[in-house]
Image 1 (cartoon, rainbow, N blue to C red):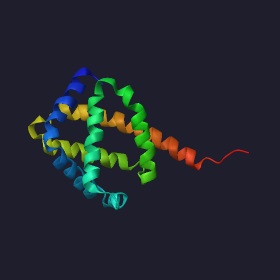
Image 2: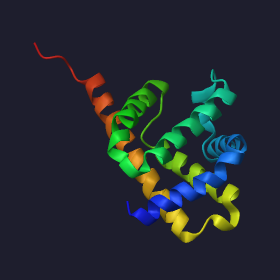
Image 3: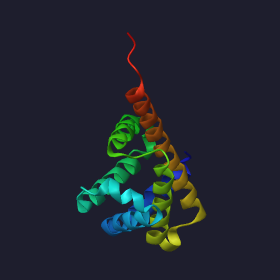
Image 4: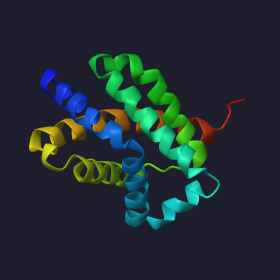
Length: 147
């Protein structure tokens, strides 16, 4: 990721922070509108806590954007954990769509083509690591032990 893209992520996220709980709420509303079946994954969740966790995860990504390799172990753990929650590979596209839509709503005129490009690249990187870890976790879970 280019230094310019990293800077777009930092500056745009700084604009979201003051409205982060509202943005997280919009994100989940959009996510469930795009795929109502995803609500089932959150049936036992405290959504206020879930919004907080989303913002916390986003902060971790933005705070590590200058050293993304340091974030890989955390992202791999998240990917494996999401398998246990019932997240499927196809859900990552829906999450990405909901995230980009939410950022566009919150950032308004600051949602430039450059900002969108930076966020698409960041989400692709983050979700790629998570998806790979999730796939490996699924493979390990279905692998038959050898005797």
